[in-house]
Image 1 (tube, rainbow, N blue to C red):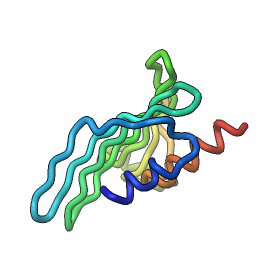
Image 2: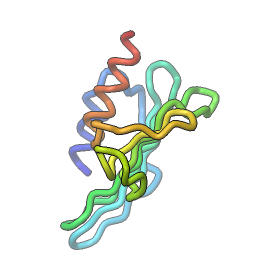
Image 3: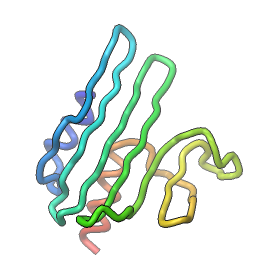
Image 4: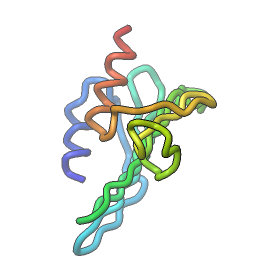
Length: 114
């Protein structure tokens, strides 16, 4: 959790963020964040981390609420080389090398520069 918050605080593309939900126990945490990006788009971050699991969903949408890309590791789309990691772009399901918040922020930074 601290790593995620640290990355959001250091990023030049994150204008602000709000923690929407946070739960934790002895061996897990669940974090849900809404981050505003400098281009007025938003990134919704969901992470569940335990000793045995790392489940995530990173949902990037434009200022009107339209999906740009959503990355997640829900265990479906077994035909993809990067299973369970994948991304949704419109109605397309694609392989994804971006598998954590650091990767996602770097990806969005590159998109905003181009």
